[in-house]
Length: 545
Image 1 (cartoon, rainbow, N blue to C red):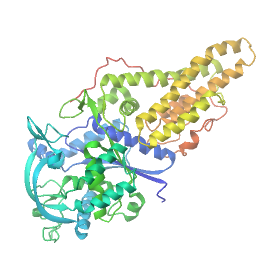
Image 2 (tube, rainbow, N blue to C red):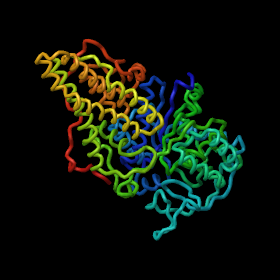
Image 3 (cartoon, rainbow, N blue to C red):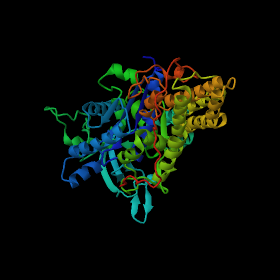
Image 4 (cartoon, helix red, strand yellow):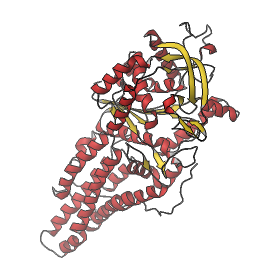
């Protein structure tokens, strides 16, 4: 397989400590769109998402509930899968850090780092955030409530003193600086790249990759003297401790590509083309992770996209604050396609954005019910009414010219991970098609044609043919965002939709997105069917918290 015809995309893996909010799965929806787009283009695509199960707060919460950590995470993983199914997420693998092949991968990464002379035993003393990990002095805030992690201000920090294994991150400072300079697209958007490069230039410190005294985690495979921690019966010596959760979690990306068990698969899929992650974990993915990979003799990922947070009245959406939207309840009201559309249209994929239930409903009504839904409904209804359902051929008029500008803009923004801007470019074309209806007034042309006015019948066919073609192209282009609406859109226009539920299986989509490329003479439209019923703004708000 050539590196040019495959695409490996991943998301960060979320903690299985609670049911997910829409803000948690926002990046998963965005990554799913990108995976579907590449599948439809004909790229052999692998999409990985999943769950991080080994944090200290999970073990603590399970103990509070009187259950085992494994039983606790199993229950929460089921909630994640339910929510992702509701949102039509289509991973090629949903990985769990308790999966046996991931345990092998994490232990192999440790062994390779040790063989390379990159890990050593040392002492650590400092703040530990149960929701995130060890915090440098510069990474904590002093507040009236005490010392806090800026990303988890409601979580009490722990002051820990431990004898742990450390990775020589400092040894990779020059290589990291050089890599950032030689690969300017490695971290995007650019301002996030500049933040990370500034952090590197400020000096890197070695970081802990093990925990002592913790039983919930992947067993550390090496004893302090360098011998194997595996006992004769195959179990692991508890005195070796466990692999630190962040070191363990990052490794899921190579596990999902086949490391270390399937060499052929790993050579096919690694390095990853894109990691999609949140801004609070950028350092781990853009600084720690490349160093970990190089220490194991592996390549760094090609690109990391850092998105912002969903805010509610200026505050980060959070399960602990209770200001989040339940994705299953949102889907119940907006439908899966509507939920995917509004969350990615309302929130720029490169920065924070304030959202609300009312803003989601307004966006749904404006873009889906009114603009595109109305365009599709009017187009199909007029073809049925004025042409007895016979689908007319498109012409080479103003809508064709508009599409010649819209498609490159949509594709450029989509492939640059500017998902909100990609939808804006496509909906600018929707607006142009609606203006074409108002300008040409097919109902007037139909009356004139019926009255026998010369040329009006032919012109009516051109106008309606252009509108049908515009709807076909919009429905096909928006399929990665609205995968169940797309086949229904095409069906109303009398066209088959050849792609599977995950975007695989059809012909390469780019040639089909050319004007007239998909037109089939002699076809007929179906009955008009509203796809996006208008919602009342004061509709019941989905449960939060």
